Amino acid sequence: MNCEPKIRIRSKTRRWRGHKLLIAPSVGIGLTLLAVALFFASFPMPPSTAVMQIIAPPAMRSRVAAIFLCSNSLIGLTLGSLLVGLLNDHMFGGPAAVGSSLGLVTAGASIAAVALLALGLRPYAAALAENGAHAAE
Image (tube, rainbow, N blue to C red; front, side):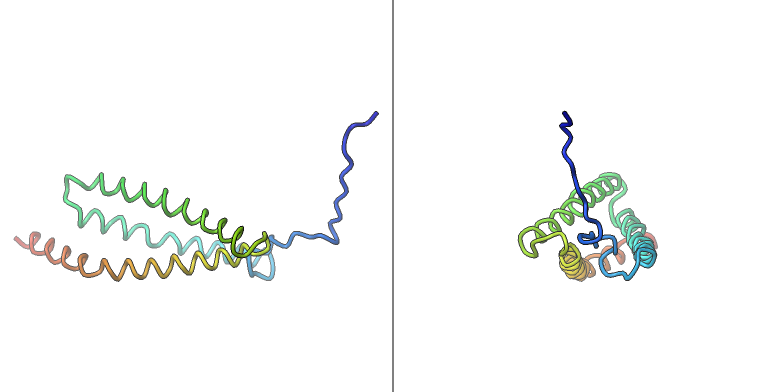
């Protein structure tokens, strides 16, 4: 007696279209766009870590860098994925709408980043001026 279930997959009628990498017309173009996006996504990291080392007092530099990396990992990598999943499950409802969830989370994160950068611009300029005054002495 054969106890194995028989599974039939109709690949021609039910195709998974998630391989298109959101909106790219082909896999090759999608991977190329993804590679370009990941290349440019790494650009903000070196300047942000350099700014932290310049602004932080010498005795606190390692702590500031550790807090930055920890918060970047915990908040950035987990909260973003969580929001995409929550939006997809509760707002858009279905695996076909992952692109909409990603777009909405990316747009919201971009707006929040611009707002936070605008808030930190004046204190950063003041700290640079203060450090420049100490360096000139």
